[in-house]
Length: 17
Image (cartoon, rainbow, N blue to C red):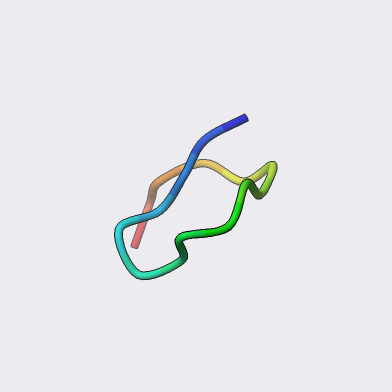
């Protein structure tokens, strides 16, 4: 699980943005 800087929620998506 990758946590995006803009999304403080545990989401299963690659940090491409």
